[in-house]
Length: 187
Image (tube, rainbow, N blue to C red; front, side, top):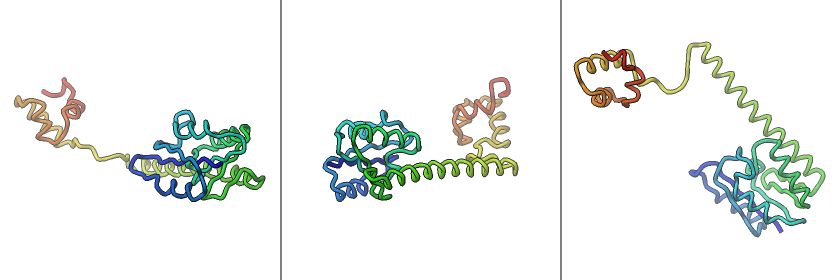
């Protein structure tokens, strides 16, 4: 018997493609989660339930390896847990089947390469941010408060306008106004 597991990361994604593929692969039971793959197995109720249904000789099937998890350590531990129970793992997209020696090797290689790709992406992002900082670019969204707005806010407050009205006039929130003009600098 095969048990299917499908997962999406965000609520605006759709499980239909994964579920259809798992049904076509012959999964008799399909369990799902709608949360990040970075979560541990215990925090994913669908995966936890799927693991509870598995008996020796059964196979856990996913549409793609990254639907099971993100980190090599977690994936290897999960597949190790399956093996200890006498169960197998199958990924449809990558054609991984741990019931064969080649499938086990392929699983470990893909899991390691997936983690390496994530780490390289992080390195490239950090290098790009560092380069931008060296060029004077800070990043993030533009500040709402300009020097002119700070001066206008100071003048309006000095003239007796209530802070809520000043903030509304400048198109900012009251906390932003207070952040830029602490109590001692409002006069």
